[in-house]
Image 1 (cartoon, rainbow, N blue to C red):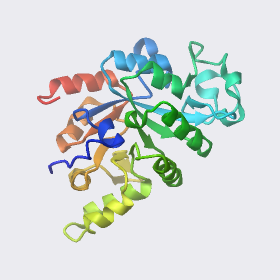
Image 2: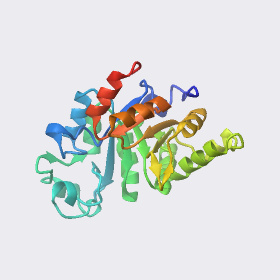
Image 3: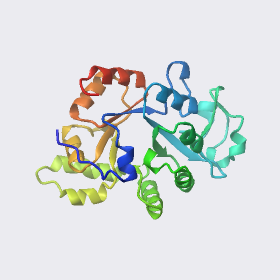
Image 4: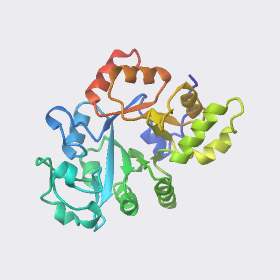
Amino acid sequence: MRPHRQNHPSTPAARYLELPRPRAFAHRGWHIGEWDGLENTLAAMRAATDHGYRYIEIDVHATSDGVVIVHHDDTLARVTGSQGSVRDLAWSELADVRVHGREAVTRLDAALRELPTARFNIDIKSDAAVEPFVATIDEAGARHRVSIASFSTRRLHRLRRLFSRGGELPAAALTRLGVAAVWAGSRLAPLRPPLGLLRKVAWGHMAQVPLIYRGRTVVDQRFVDLCHDLGIEVHAWTINDAAEMHRLLDLGLDGIVTDRPDTLTAVLAERPQR
């Protein structure tokens, strides 16, 4: 495995990534056991921090009046039983909505305020959420506590532009194009493109990837080594099996996103270097 390059220590991204690796991410919070079904709620996030998790993966949308809420789907139906699209509802209309009848829908600003030591990996799920999200992060002074991610390359570029106007970019996941470029480059050695050229396409700080995409293995030693040569961390999602966690950590992965944080906690406790 290659040595891992470090970001400049004063940047928001470097502060976000300053904790020791490997990074354990509670996917949508700790929503197992007594918190079963409470994904993306403040209760699940608080449970994750209570269990020692410093990194929490969450998703955000924006309401019709520009309030950023922690919620995965475009609609409310799956987790609340209520009808309607988030983008069509004002925040006041969500006041009585409960996740599985128990927990209120959480505002992002409330999560940042109530969990001041947590670091959040945030998937921005809609175009409408981009500007309110940037405003929420900056109003909270939280660039050093968040990383930005999206399945939309266009959305990530827009986030990059908006954040760049007001200072340095928070930690950011690679775009799909960036991941594809690094993956292809890892297959071309020793004829791969120069690192500087690859870095222009792969401009983020983290490759957050599934193990397999469209039948092709993404995460293997070649991919991990090239990411590290580029100063990019590799985080795999969503990994819930203990044996798979051990295998990936043996490859030198920097982070694991899991729906079974209890399993990942046990795996990390078994390893000689935590």
